[in-house]
Length: 172
Image 1 (cartoon, rainbow, N blue to C red):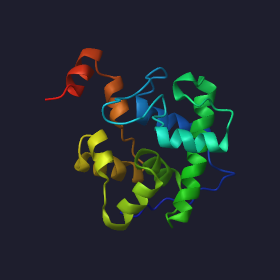
Image 2 (cartoon, rainbow, N blue to C red):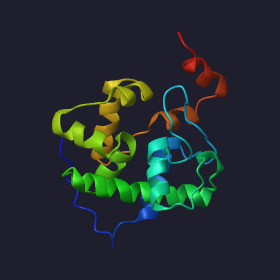
Image 3 (tube, one colour):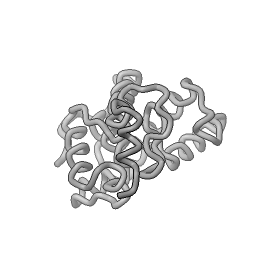
């Protein structure tokens, strides 16, 4: 499915609105969510920033703490801005149009993951494992590409009672 939105014009891109949307989708708007589910992935904080994305953001802004758990809310937002800029750069490199929808899908799946998905429908095993299976990942990506809100696993976990989260994470 190819997105139909117009490319991002940096002068017209509303980073604050985009960040608010990502925060709702990734953590259910819970600023103190911490790790979303360490048994399934490394997503952390209100924006669901993974360990790899955090390291990329630190290369852009070395003042970010090495340990993501030590980041202030302001540093998390700065890292989110860096992740968005990195995703835009990577999407362009992979030949994917950069717009709010592709950025949102790339935030969820990674820029390469999104490029692979758009090319031939590929979903990585890690993305499937962390998000309830390949079909669920495809649903989320397609919704984000269509400009719809599509919660990731952290947003879903953020609204469940802790006991229910623990029960789901326990091995069968």
